[in-house]
Length: 185
Image (cartoon, rainbow, N blue to C red; front, side, top):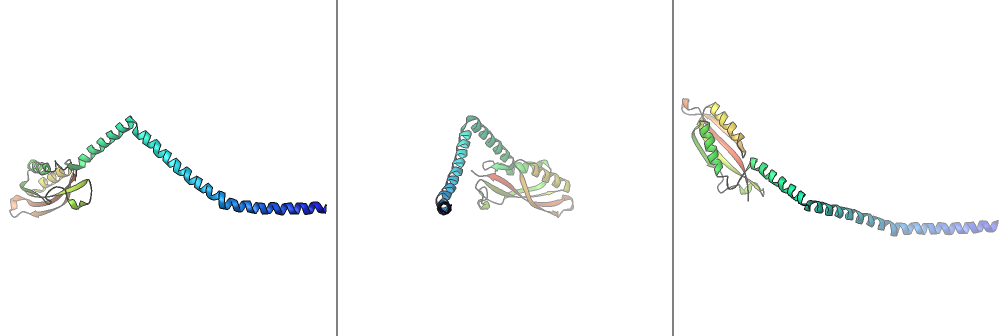
């Protein structure tokens, strides 16, 4: 029985030593490899997803849908910003609005020459600033202001000043600063 006990002790020590060596080998060799395999699997899944999205995007109906969406967004942008070529017509539009709303002594001039402001820092959209001056009564001023703000492309009224005109029956002298977004090309 003592021989068996000595044999079991020896075998247990050998097994324990082998277990420690195998655990050490697992920690140094196999565990880092599993982490690398997980990273490679995640990269592979990402690339497969990108490939599937490219294949999906390349289908004709998806290309047509994307083109329709781009055109829809361009038309929506046209409601808020004028094309660079049409920016000159805005002063004419504003003059027509002023004539319709019965304002007198109307004057209009651009603050920046040569199109959109280069200092805006935006790649595709710039702004034109315009100074407007006129004489009107308060009701005419309010209807003119309302018509400007409802205009398409949108005219942003930055600020205005109203002072009593020198002549009592003339109404009020109004000065306005407006801005218009312009799409750069």
